[in-house]
Structures are given as structure tokens and as C-alpha cells.
Image (tube, rainbow, N blue to C red; front, side, top):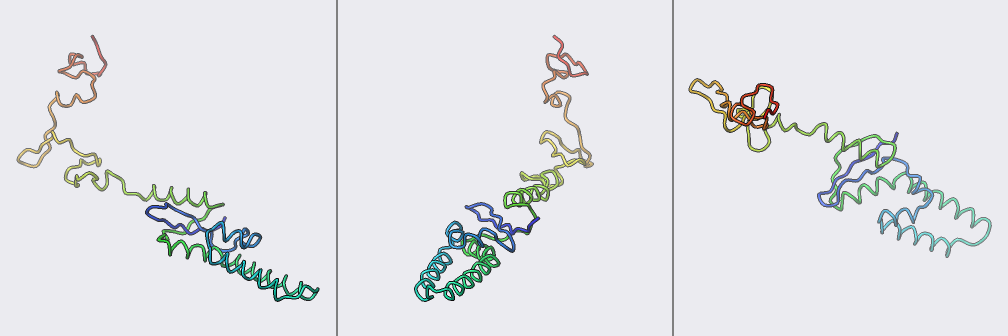
Length: 185
């Protein structure tokens, strides 16, 4: 499995950039740079191709020199291309959030999303919605605003009538006080 950098942007979302070697950059060089919108790199590669065709003679030795130069250039782009792409994203406002492992960028994004869900604060633990820990019972459920405390600080339960929020009839509904909660009538 490969390692990926996870970068996020407030408006543009999340991207996964592989750490290390890039096969597409090795085989497609300038076209890879264009696809990644790395305009300066693509322009530099195009300029290198044009200049090498102008200044390297079209002989057997010239062809060998040209091939060695292009191989070196492709190796450099392959080793550094993903790092350059991550740096470009950071200059555009992306921020590095994590390093994750995955088979491909989509898998890495899924791993990151799952880790974010797992580490997200539990609503009951932190009292979301303005309720603090005093407004929660022992199981973390928020107390109903109809519950109150008596003078000693003990909880006083709601009336039986108010306890009938689930619509099963209760003691004051159509069920006539049926304790099983089934509707009779």
C-alpha cells in the first residue's frame, strides 16, 4: 500500500497526494504536469524539448545524449513530481491534515474520512446544542426541559402525563392507562 498526504481546502474539498514515485509522471511527463495544472513545470518541459531538439545534433551520438537527458528528466519528475504537486496545492490554500495508507487516492480519502468520523466528538459527550454536562443524565442523554430539581438537588421525574411522548396512549390518552403501551380501543 502507498502512503498519501491528505490536504484540505475550505472551498475545494479534500485531496490525496501520493508520497514518493509517480508512474504517470514518468511515462507522460509534460502531459501529467498539464493534467495536474502545474503550468510552470509543463512549460519548462516543453521548453526543454524544444531547446534540445534545436541544439542537440540529429546524429547517433546526439540521439544518445537526448535519450539520457530525457531519462534523467523523467526520473527527476517521477521522484519529485508528487512533492511539487503537494507544494503547489499548499500555495493555493490547501492544508496538510494527515498521512494515510491506501491502494489509491480514493481509498486514502475513504480511510481519512472514516478516521475523521471515528475521532469526531460524540454529541452526548460534549453537550452539543448549548447543553452542558449538568443538563445530562448518567447515560449522557440530555434532560428534558420539563424535568426539574427539587431543593436538595435530586431529580424529580416528569409527570405520567408528560411521560407519554411516544404516543402509546399512556394514562391520559386513548389507551386508558394500558401499561403495555399497545392501543386498545
